[in-house]
Length: 315
Image (cartoon, rainbow, N blue to C red; front, side, top):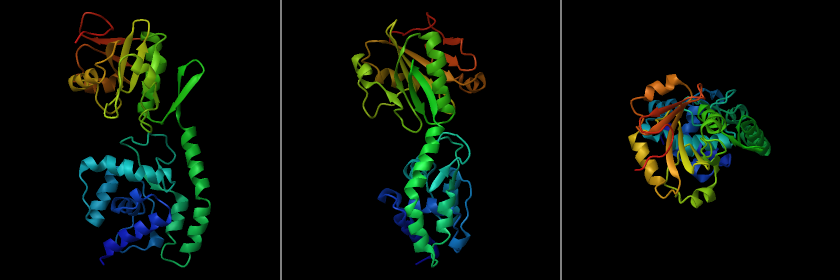
């Protein structure tokens, strides 16, 4: 057996010993663990490290040291089907000491300190005793990290006395601004129908209300980041929160029109930006007959053509 295969098999055995689910005991997950420990072939487990690595550097490390090449579009698979579970199991920490969203392109990951101490005993006489001690306190560790994540969540008031919490990060902060600053100004007394979340894609969803307006969304429909029902005018405001991804351009406008085609409420398309600097990157892409709102100038709305300031258009 080659040295590289032996290390991959050892990492799989470790993941099994730690009680990771079967879906996280494959080659991809084993290589992710090796990367987080900087376990290059031939290195002693006692010398395992704890580098801070993003998803792309993890994939680069796999390619350089274990000849495993993943396509660039595999980043989300690595993130969502291995690294997220490592974080949930308190095997790894996302953005230690920071509050970026877990799927932020700038996120970095690091092996959890007590897990590092344990794994440095692998293949020594101390391993089994150290593993038993670690596993005895593992639920407590997972609970502690879950509590820390909960404390860093972003609170959003969706109605007087009613609050939801979103995964921390710039995207969620802008969603909060849309609900708390945009809606009261331009759609007063509107009702929140949907708010997406980077950690839980349906952070809030009143499916019954949307269905009462003639819209049934299946699992394949990509919802906008925020949906508001402006009851006074019977409009549905479909709002995209743009921090790193695109605005309501022609393609997205068509997708949303199709998704909400059964709506008995008029459709209003809005793109929200945190500031004008980010907006300027996307000016050439924004679709006509849509609205643009910028969080750092909350009392203003930018209207892209048409005969009215804010309102739905007949398709």
